[in-house]
Image 1 (cartoon, rainbow, N blue to C red):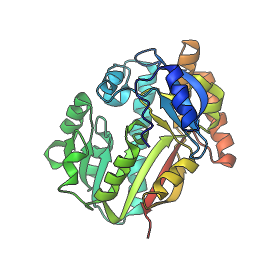
Image 2 (tube, one colour):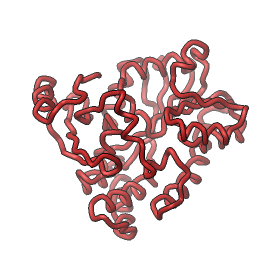
Image 3 (cartoon, rainbow, N blue to C red):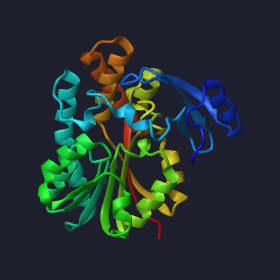
Amino acid sequence: MDYGMKGMTSKENQLIADQKKLQLFLKCQDHGVSRETFELFLDPDKQMLVTLPQPDLNDLPSYYESEDYISHTDSTRTVVDRVYQFVKNYSVKKKLRLINSLIDREGSILDIGCGTGDFLAVCQKGGWRISGIEPNEKARTIASGKIGNQGAVTEAIDAYLKTHKESFDVITMWHVLEHVPDLEQYIEQLKLLLKPDGWLIVAVPNFNSYDAKHYREFWAAYDVPRHLWHFSDFSIKQIFQGFGFKVKRILPMVFDSFYVSILSEKYKSGKTNLLKAFRIGLISNLKARHSKQYSSLIYLIKKAT
């Protein structure tokens, strides 16, 4: 799914998008780092969005170099930081309960994009054999300090491909798939690492949610250009089916609508409007009880048999 559009101008984006039958969906600004404007194009066949232009692989790390990119820190400087850390501490325990409900034994888990290692640390305490992948050096150092010598955190997936084929009972990607430059290659690698009866857990934002439609270009979960792809439930099912996987269940991440709305309000108005953000987040979750289009969704995936 390499659209070959890295470093293109807006006119060139549109030209290639026309050739690929993509449709201009929205224009968004990088509110976190560069302030540059990017375009989101809809692939009508896959029902997903692609960010254009996509930064060159050598330039991509520079878009993560910000104190505000909180998944790479344990910051509590701002109200938004403190809300994030509170939700994170609750969520990692809930994620462990989910994994324990899928597998009735403590096995091996690989957390891709493990950030500062909180989820791995909780899994370790729960008896799991842990491994992690984190490209950001600062976050990787923090994660390694939390898990000690009983686990490993590497920079890239390549470190596991030669020695860990079909080795993991669970592979998790909590808000990571949208960052992966080459989707097809990465999903193939996931398939190599997962045990035949293992579980792949993928959590991604959902651009069909109410809060996404409400905030439009200010929706924080677009997070261009760090988010290269923007998925719907249809696109996730179709993409993984093409690689011999099957989505078994879809679960909501109900806290995401609140956190994303807090950031979106800040991007839209320049202010931290907690009450308004909470209201939009609540409306989004209430509407999703019927539509199932929550702000973020967790996909429980297995190899097709």
